[in-house]
Structures are given as structure tokens and as C-alpha cells.
Image (cartoon, rainbow, N blue to C red):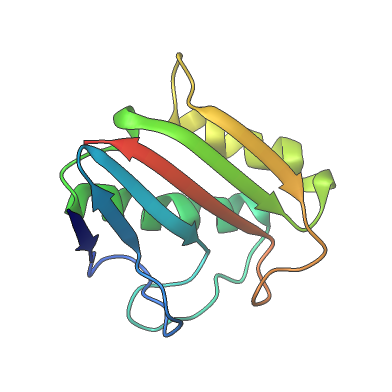
Length: 125
């Protein structure tokens, strides 16, 4: 059975997708972006500040589903500039410990709005 997860403390889009979907003991998060919950404002900052906001949104969604960063098994990262890869990794390393989740990171030409980073997450519950 599929269950939609809604976190009030995370950015919720007006576009047609869920923040996350639970299927069995697995949670699939849509791409999380650096936007404020409630105001929908894009974080005005460098890649480190944007990445911190993305993690805040991800953590709120994980918590709403009854899990945490400790149970993340897969991450996909989209960066608009690979020069941001190391500053992104600095924040990423502060959030995870070994064994790190499986991960892909790719540069994209653009994202849906003026963000520099978007992150998809799969987690166990």
C-alpha cells in the first residue's frame, strides 16, 4: 500500500507531487530544494546555506515518516555547478557518518527555480 507523507515543517510545492511516499518499509522523498516552509521563499545564500536548508527539509520529512538521516540508504544530488561539489560535500559530511548512503551527484543545466542544489532521498523505516 502507498501512503503519502506530509511534513508541515518542510517546504511543500504547489506542483503535482508528494513530499514523500511510503511503500512498505521504504520511504521515497521527492527532490528537496532550499525553500522555506510556509513562506515558500528560496534561501538566498551560497551553496552551503542552500544545502543546509535542503537537509532541514529532508529531516522534517523523514521525521514525519518516523525515520531519520540514520536510515537513509540512497541520495541523488543535482548541482547546477560542479564547482559547488566540495562545499556541498562539506555540509553532507556533517550530516552522515559511515557507512554513508549510496549516492550519485550530477551537474544539471538548470533546476525548476533559482536553486543551486536539489536532493532526492530514499530511506528505510
